[in-house]
Image (tube, rainbow, N blue to C red):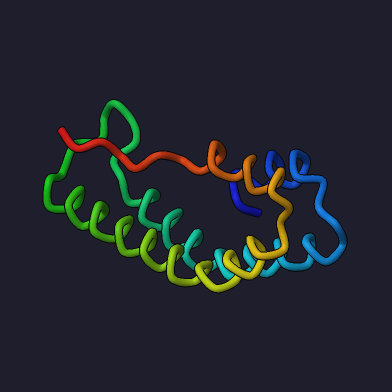
Length: 104
């Protein structure tokens, strides 16, 4: 399931048709989410792990690629679901989406 799925589905009170459309969004997202998890697993974790700049750059690239895959894979299913949402449900969607990462 997507990280925000429990929050959104309880907040939206989806109809059966909307719930089926949401499952299509989740199903489409799974391969990209698996790629994100795999990229994160390559990061240095503990205090004894040495930072490795080339590895960190590779991980950042893999994460960016997986995020793009996520957007591309869920674009169609999410638009289909969005068309089914009521104005009240749509109003709940925007605050639940994470903001883009700030650049320093």
